[in-house]
Amino acid sequence: MIQLQYIKEHRDECIERLKIKNVADVEQRIDEIIALDERRRALQQRSDAVKAEQNAIAKEIGMLFKQGKRDEAEAKKARTADLKADEKQLAEEMATVEQELNAKLISLPNTPHLSVPKGKSADDNLEVGRFGTMPELPADALPHWDLCAKYDIVDFELGNKVTGAGFPFYKGKGARLQRALINFFLNEAANAGYVEIQPPLMVNEASGLGTGQLPDKEGQMYAIPLDGFYMIPTAEVPITNIYRGEIVSADQFPIKHVGYSECFRREAGSYGKDVRGLNRLHEFSKVEIVVIEHPDRSYERLEDMKHHVGGLLDKLGLPYRILKLCGGDISFTSAMTFDFEVWSAAQKRWLEVSSVSNFEAFQANRMKLRFKDSDGKTKLCHTLNGSALALPRIVAALLENNQTPDGIIMPECLRPYLGFDRI
Image 1 (tube, helix red, strand yellow):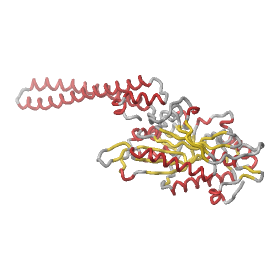
Image 2 (cartoon, rainbow, N blue to C red):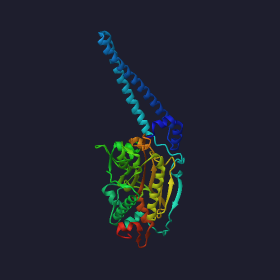
Image 3 (cartoon, rainbow, N blue to C red):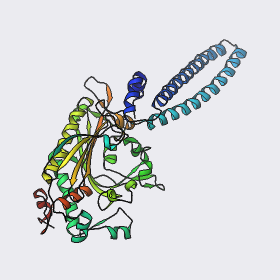
Image 4 (cartoon, rainbow, N blue to C red):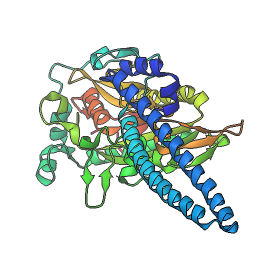
């Protein structure tokens, strides 16, 4: 949530930055927020005045009774009753205004960093680097869904039978590849100083609100209405919410966590090559890195996280590119995001496998996640997260890029976890 003080003190700047995200009716929305805050403050002043008058009258009544002026005292008591009614009405009005103000604040996306490029869609993202060697495959190379069937390692039809589209079964060496990748990613993160967390797969509404999935992505999350829970779309949600409502010490920074979880997303789609096979699933495995950092160092930390993700792809031998997302493609909560895409040689297309983002104080403001700075003042933390990595498209690229007439060659870094060198 954007800080109200920032909106009031930097109205024009806030509007210009939100225009980069193509926010509709942004001037009107900002001015409505400012007007509601002014109304709330006016109501608060009136309420304070009413309370002050009640306190003054209470003292007068006591004095009047002591002086035997009962009639005057009773008149003052009648005035007190009127003031209490006024106070109640003002409190109700203020609660309504605060609720409306909060709803409008929560509906605003984060302001993007000033360096985020303008654009309408993914077509306008800025490529900032390419790494690795593009594999050369024969003309008859198979896409990963055919390789999965050929070697019986991922069964999409069985998943459709038992659950539905987007819920595959991993079998034999396919299941072992999943487990190997998860352990490899977790161990690499641990070596980089991330503390491992195994989070729950369901969160409550407050957690969804805290990290910004609600209300923005409510239709994309699997909900359990009877219990008020949501299946997590990423381990970012429960891990970041560990610190909801907390005040951490500045000497704890950076707070670095890594967690593996299953992830659940309703928006997977159902038609075309973009969603075929492992390209887009409703349930998938992912290892997530989360950092809580001092505001002065959060962009330095973002670079560290980018380096970590790139290092994983280098070790896997996958060619990849890094994109700086434009305003039209960056998420609701993010101030800056870099996407990592691997080259899928048989499909001849780039597949997104990681997003590394800095949310600045946006999530922290929603969660009331703060720290005591060296000057003794309580301030909002900055939060960051990144996929390190999401498995399905990594598996797709590994299968396609490493296929040979004699099987699919496994990367050296995975062989100690797998116990075999090829499928």
